[in-house]
Amino acid sequence: MSAWDPQLYLTFSSERTQPSVDLAARVQVAEPRRVIDLGCGPGNSTAVLKARWPSAAVTGLDSDPEMLATAAQADPTTHWLQADAATWQPDETYDVVFSNAMLQWLPGHADAVTRFFRAVAPGGALAVQVPTHQFSPLHRHIVEVASDPKWPTSLRGVRNAIHGHDVGFYYDLLSPLVERVDLWETEYCHVLAGPEAILTWIRGTGLRPFLNALPTDADRREFEADLLAKVTTSYPRRPDGRVLFPFRRLFFIGYRDR
Ligand SMILES: C[S@@+](CC[C@H](N)C(=O)[O-])C[C@H]1O[C@@H](n2cnc3c(N)ncnc32)[C@H](O)[C@@H]1O
Image (cartoon, rainbow, N blue to C red; front, side):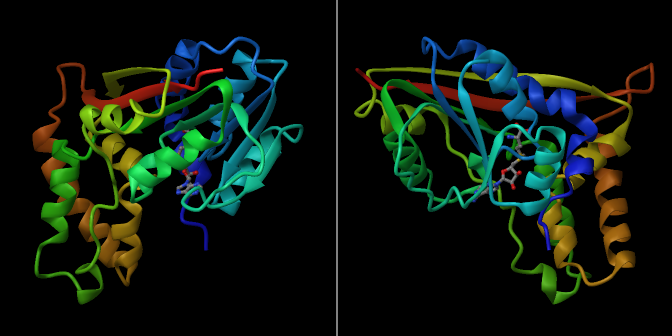
């Protein structure tokens, strides 16, 4: 079974794709010939890379078959590759190794980032965006709701599966490897239709492991109702009825010398 629902994920396509636009715009590699998008999802970030570097050969890599099927349907001309980024060891190098919103699903960031950087060709760059949203009220509320003893034991072992570190961790990791590194953080402030939209957003990503662990649809509905009550308090409606949904993301670009 697919762990992802591409259509649900793309409900917020514009908000989810903006970090790729911002990251790709800041990559300073002249005329890259080979580019790879790790965790390409439904191909939204890959499309950004193709627009940024129209003459490059771009590959989209993802472990999820449904995400890749959606990507291939939208753009049959791109090379789509099913592989696990947790063990990916390419034979060839790439001028740009890019990853938007995938790293948080991998444990062991020291190993992953070092391995990804090994795939960068001389003069190329590793460009990564990783959400650092795990300390938000939304993620705190998911853990609070999940710890209610009323749930079946199946929910016990489920943890917030989002991995991430502070900016110093990535700097210390990259600085011995790179010629130069750029790092920055941005808090996007998404304007969403209401608290329910925040639930729809997280249902497409971080909530999935919790919902999948619950045995019945009734349990899932109750879990979401409990979460919505908390979200409604932490993300109050503005006078126009909408909510502001701050979302923090960390970016880094490590350049390999020639
Ligand atoms: C949040 S989506 C990001 C999609 C797209 N890059 C974007 O910018 O919106 C995360 C993607 O990472 C993929 N992913 C998660 N773990 C992975 C792994 N170990 N190897 C490859 N892809 C993985 C998921 O299948 C999913 O498509």
